[in-house]
Amino acid sequence: MENEENMTTFKIGDVVQLKSGGQKMTVKNCVFANVNVTYFDEISKEFKFQTFEDELLVKVEEG
Image (cartoon, rainbow, N blue to C red):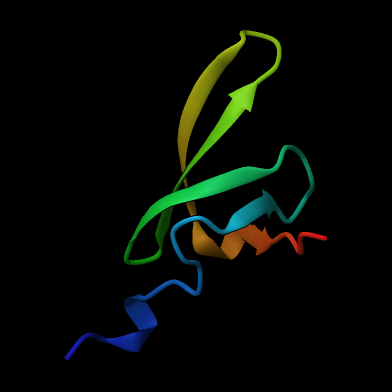
């Protein structure tokens, strides 16, 4: 049985944002408390990938 303290509340496909604001990002996968996200960088015109601790992110309500 997995330890619930090591699991994130985000799911693949969730749209998230840093608690401090910034660009919307899509959850690619989660490894324990680390959330891997992807987003499109308008300046470089490239997709970027980043990893954040789940405590730094909030889910963005769509709609």
